[in-house]
Length: 433
Image 1 (cartoon, one colour):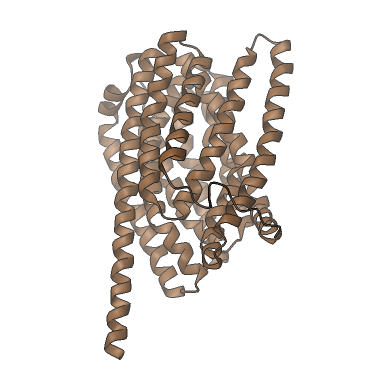
Image 2 (image 1 turned 180 degrees about the horizontal axis):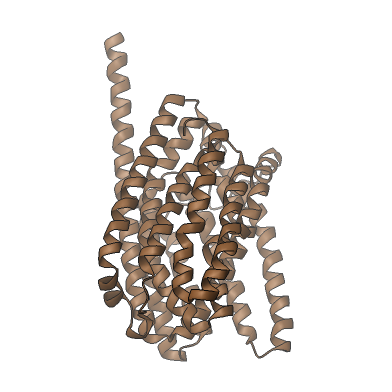
């Protein structure tokens, strides 16, 4: 009997490992194909779009990112955390319904704000009102996409997520280039292309993929408000994270725009995208593979497994980031020549500094995961606020005196500060760091 029990346990462990490996393979394939699509897209877009327009696109996408972070990302993060628990209770439909109900209200409020504010601003300036209509449309489709993406990854369905993400990474620049060719190289053309690509991706998913939490074509509506209350309680401390995260990750573009000019924003954004993408990609691959298992271990009280998964997660991340940083230090000139149009290439060295900063950020993101897992989201706010404050204090004077070079040098300084704070505070959430 003991032998049979041992064999059963070993088979369970073997199947669990096999599933993790399969998920990791799909996550890696999706991210690699997406990264290639993004890099090819940057190369082609920089051929068709001048730096000033590319800079404007970067700034407006930054605004969309801020809106999404404020109104949607905290709720979607809650969906990831509560998915294992609601799965055990058989209440995935209720989880979806609660998430959609919260996001529907938030989305309508923000779209109304964008359209109203855009009408006022366009009447007082020469800015086209269509830019704000497109901005609202882009936000709307991103919210719908975010719901499906988060529920797929929470359910560890890496295959459809990988295929969707990869297809969209190629569709976005392709659609933008087509619209630019047809309508001209304008901000509106690029934004419209991005919206069209996202809509096409959503239509394919709604047609071909079984969506999480859908029963007979519609979500279950439940009068139980306890889950919605728990989601809001979890999400509220994360709302300021949108601002502080946006400041630390995107404010340098606005600082450059104010101190140096839109053309330099376009150059910096293109190089920034090339340097940061490999590290973000690696971080996502590892997280998609290990985060669901890590949250499951915590939800079921498996302390030893929890610590083991976390240590593996952190060790792999550090090793991959170190390898990527060394590669970029030696190959950055060749990468810029290959992946950027001539007018986007800069004489100053930007990529290694940005790569160093993003390696520190990706490691910090892993270290703060116990704060999410144990629902101590206030600590996340403190960690990311430190990075945001450091980015302003360090970034403005460096950009003022040294332009793009100063902006790049600032990246590892403020993300390094965030990493140190995350190590200190994450120990309060779970003392195995």
